[in-house]
Amino acid sequence: MLTVAAAVILTSVSCIYDFNPLQSLDSSFWVDVYVFEGDILAGDITEISIRSASPIYDNMSGHSGLMLGGTSYDYAPYTVYFDVSVECSDGTVIPAVFNGSRYRIDTRNIDLDKEYRLVAKRSGSEYGVALEPREYVSAWLPVMKASAIDSVSFEILDEERLAVEVSAGGAEPLGGKYFRWTGKETWEYTAPLYASAYYDWNTNTIKYYKWDENNNFYCWKSAVAPFVKVGKVEDYDGGRIIGRKLFEYDNMNSKLQYVYSVEILQETISEEAYRFWTALEKNTFDVGGLFSPQPSEIRGNIVNPADSSELVIGYISASQVSRAKVYIDQRLTRFYKGKTLLPDPEVLWPDNWLYWYWNGYCPFAIHEEPNASFVDDRIWDWYPRRCLDCTLQGGTTQKPEGWDYSYQESLL
Image 1 (spheres, rainbow, N blue to C red):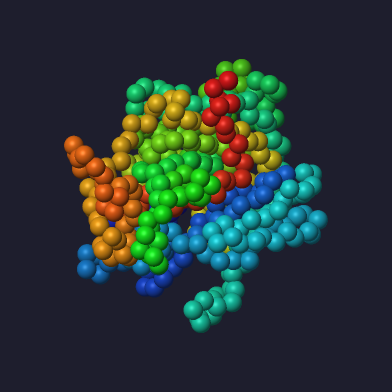
Image 2 (cartoon, one colour; image 1 turned 90 degrees about the vertical axis):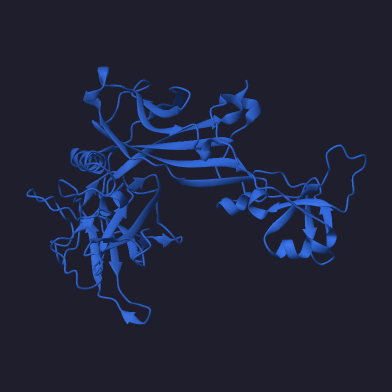
C-alpha cells in the first residue's frame, strides 16, 4: 500500500488542486522519494524494506508522474541500499543484515520497557558517483504489548469469492485499542504436467526419473499478503474482534491451485499509527484507482533530520506481534476453477530431440496414435519446459520453513 501511495500520476487539470507529493520537488533531474515498509517487532525478527520512487517527465506528451524503477518503462519500485539499524533509548544499536530485498534486524531479545527508533544512513558511491550523505530516523517509539489472535479462518462467500478472516479478544481481553494486520502467504503449486522422464543431451537418450528424484513438479512460493488492515476495538460489539475480513481471492486465483497458506500478523498500534493507515487506505481505494491523485498528504513518522521538509513515505511502529496461520486445500474446498491451457505437443523422433531441447522443450510421454495397434517408444511428445518445471513460475522445490501442513491430518 505504501508503494501504491507513492505511485500516483498527477496530470489532471482542475480548479481544485489535489495533493501532489512531488509538486515542490525539483523535476529537472532525478529526485528520490523514499518509501519505508515494516515495523520494529519485539520478540521477533524485524524486516524493513526501503524503496525509491522518482518523478519522470515525458517531453513528448508533457505528462508527469513517478518513476518507480530504473527506466521510464519500468514501474517496479527499486530497492535502495542503506546502513540500517534499530537504536535503543539506552544507546544500544542493533545493526541490520541485508538479504537482497529487505533488512533483517534481530529484535527478539529487546527490552520491552525501553523505547526504540529506526535509523537508515546512506553514504559511499554508486556506479562510481559519490552519493550525497543522508540519514532518516523514525520517532522514538515505546513497545506496544501484544494481544493474542483467537483464530484465522476462511469463508467461501459464494461460488466466486473466498475471504480470510481474523478473530481476537475471546480467549483473553485485548491489550490495546487499535490494531493492524498484515500477512505472509505461501502456496504450494504444481507444474501443469508431470514429467516422468528427462532428456540426457550427452547421450541423446530419454531416461526415466528414479522414484526419489525431484522432477520439479511440486513447488512453493512466498510473498507478502496483498493487504494492510487496521481496526479499533470500539467498532466491534463487546470489545471483541470477530470475523474481521482481511482480504478476498476469487476462484481463478492461481495461488489457490493446490495448497495455500497465509500467516496473519497482528500488532497493537498507537492512535497516530491507526490514523496514518486509515488515511492511506482511504486515499488509495476511495479516489478512483491506483493512479488517481491523492486528496491528502501521506506523511508518517520518518524524517530527514537535516531537512524536515523532505517527503518520506512510511510509518514505523514498535510492537510485539501475534501470529496465526490457516491452510486452504483445493482437494477439500474444490473452490479453485482455473484451468491451464496447454499448447499442442511437438511429436519428435530422436534425430530432432537435441534441437528442441536447446529451444526450451522437454519430453513428456511416449506418443500414442489413436487406435494404434502398437506404440513406438522412439517417438515422444515434447512440451515447453514451463509446462513441466514449476520453478519457472518463480517458486522453489524446497519446502519452506514452517510449512507444517498434512493433508491426512486435515481429514481428521
